[in-house]
Image (cartoon, rainbow, N blue to C red; front, side, top):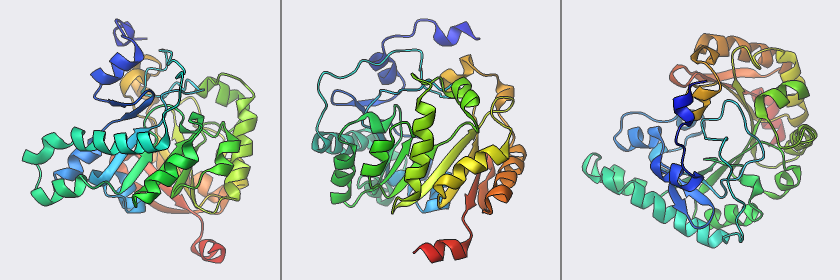
Amino acid sequence: MPDQIYNNIPDSRTLLKNQGYSLVGNHSAVKTCLWLKRSIKEEGACYKSRFYGIKSHCCIQMTPTLLCNQKCIHCWRPTEIEVPVPEEWDSPVEIKGSSIYAQRKLISGFGGSASRERWMEANKPEHAAISLSGEPTLYPYLPELIDEFTKECITTFVVTNGTRPEMITRIRPTQLYLSLDAPDKNTYLEVCNPESPELWENIKKSLSNLYSKNVRTVVRITLIKGVNMFNPEGFAKLINTAKPDFVEIKAYMHLGFSRGRLSRESMPSHDEVYAFASKIADYLGYEVADNVEISRVVLLSRPLESLLGQS
């Protein structure tokens, strides 16, 4: 483990500020991603733009809480640092307004490197990716926060680890992602280091709850070579309980604090991801709908006739 990665780590809020996060209120945060910076200068876009039509430069990447109940080994965040539980939760109205303000402040410096039209577009966010850091379903007013963004005509993607099935039933984002990083309980405990082993049962319940959601649903798998890149049939059996519209299968990337837990060799190549994804697709009866090599990600889709039959 490279000791230098963990040497002299400050408290969580100071660390986040040093990493370019804009802290919002008592427990939320906003951060611009690489793809927003490229998109605003018309130099490329996130794979979500290709898969789902998202304008990367009009997307707020945010979280309503920095808390998480897992310490995944592949997480680029500093899971080794404890995040204090807030004494009081900020309101959804406060978080929405502060997040939009923070996003505009963060992109203010791009006015000189992007076209005026592109920069003005970015100042009117159209999408909120509620997935930045922490587990969003731990914020007790997440349904109301989604509603607040919707009032502003801002679509929402929520990415959850699935450990709060009761919240899964309550929220109605534009798209609901559930991360599934293991085909069985033992691998889950190794990969995700949950605060309780019983959270595995919660994830399986959340997968079942996903099936009944009347929103676009996605199961997302992060593949770590030599750790969870086996048993595609086991993954498929779990995914089949959710019957999501899409499955995203992506390579672990050797970034941030994960470099202290995993080696660079833990990153599968795009070809390896594609081959593994194809096996899951075969077991599920899904189709390989698209892939983006630079992001090492493959998109699986339910057959078109299945999607049309559900609509």
